[in-house]
Each structure stands twice: as structure tokens, then as C-alpha cells.
Length: 217
Image 1 (cartoon, rainbow, N blue to C red):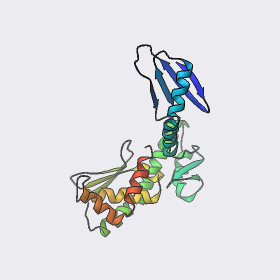
Image 2: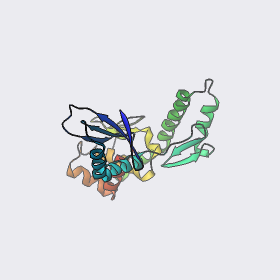
Image 3: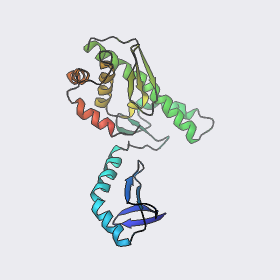
Image 4: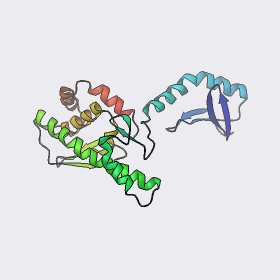
């Protein structure tokens, strides 16, 4: 594997003589990979020049989708913004960190996860109750857990589960997820009627859905 510097881009190049065509990919970590058969340097430059806008477009999408990062033990990410850990809302997190007997990344991250779960229970429960009343719907139970692939779910038993990672995104996106899951109490699908119901309470639901998709869990 060779590294190619094309303008300000660093590209990993793999030469496989048996390949019939050349391929360019951009992975989720913003690494650009070029696979080609045995070709000249001029061919590579021409190919990268031709695909430059496509490459930069994908890199932009990935960089835009990355959630804000925090300095562990110093900052906390809440509602899409990074705050000092000294804020009142993070009191429980500060207490948990101060009680750690073994300070390592695993234990620190567990403190953060526990904090987000507690904060989710405190913040999301009233939001679900509010929209359930507004939408005239009844649910059986609310559950909270950290999930890797979805922001929320609604079961046929009328149990709504919300991702504790929601505490890291903007409040309007949280409300969209809440209404989205409540709407599944009426339509257990993503039909036109389902989306119409969501739009009745979240007029800009399409934009909110697109923004959520750009955020990596």
C-alpha cells in the first residue's frame, strides 16, 4: 500500500494487477482508498482530478456528521453543545467521576453513560408524556438504553424505548424522535399516513429526519 498526496488530500493506493477497473472509496473514518491495476502516475492523477469533487463531497458529509467531541473529565455534550463539566446539569457526573477508585477511560466513559441515562430519564419522560397528551395517545412503558443503530423504537406491546444518546443532540431533534415513536402506536410502519401524522406535530419533520441521519451514533 502506498500513500499518494493529491493537493491537500492524502490517499491510500493499493495496486492489484488482476483488477480490471479502478475504484475509489471513502470510509466512515474519512480515509480515501484508491484501488487500481498496474497504471501510470499520470493515469492516477487524471482519475483523482476527475473524481475530486466526488471525494470532497463525501469527506464533507462525513465531517459534518461527526458529533462534537469532549475532553473527558472536563466537558460534557448536551443538546448539541459542549459545556464545561462545572455546569449545574452535570452535578451527578462530577460526583460519579470523583468517586472513581480506578481512573481509566473505561470507567470514565461508564460514568458518562450512566449520567446520560439518568439525564434521559429526567428530560425525556416529560417530553413523551407531553406529546402523548397532545396526540391523544397512550403508551404502556418508557425504557431508556444506549443503542448503536437507532434513536428509538416502539414495540407492538406499546413500549417505547429511547436512546440515551439523544441527550447529545439538539432539543428539536429529540422532540422529532419522541413524536416519531409515538406515531408508531398508530402506524407500525413508515407509510404515508405515518409520516402525515408526524408532520401534524413536527412540521419540519423531513429536515429533522435528514439531520439525524447525518449524525453517527
